[in-house]
Image 1 (cartoon, rainbow, N blue to C red):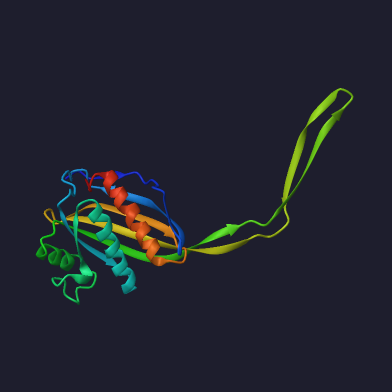
Image 2: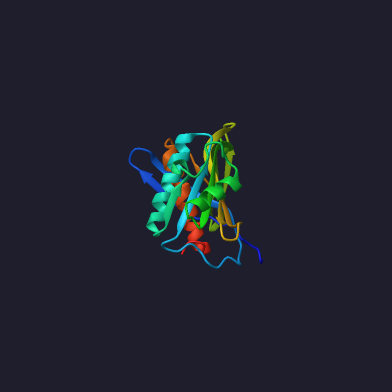
Length: 210
């Protein structure tokens, strides 16, 4: 089985909501098994399981996948509504795959969501002055100097990240994996939707969704 890596790249996305404001999401990295030539075409059936500490986000995530995949003609079985998934299955990949097979799905999408923060340096205000001019038929260029007048500071920026895998149940192996992130801007549901959308677009670009 030939394995390969896809070079990390950014897929910008801006989703603006009247109430929630705007959110941007981008892919950080992705990997593809190049020997996987089938892809998910219209008519396919996929089992989706989102993993997060907040149950409402899990349901929002799986609903978002249902909406995105429906636009591609792909049917989705959500884990939170699947009678085949035992309540104590937790995040066990093997038990999730078994539950997915019982629903007739050909593949499993697993998306892990995490919220965190990172430090951002904010420089202080600047002051500048310049020298320029000339006389007696001679001229010389200007010199500009800019100096900080404040200490600046460091602030914490909130973000949500995702890690997604696509498992082909026929092979029993992961055939695509990718990670994405978005800055959190008030509405966590909008961030989940943005992460789902940018991930689906990356999977389409990689050819695992046709």
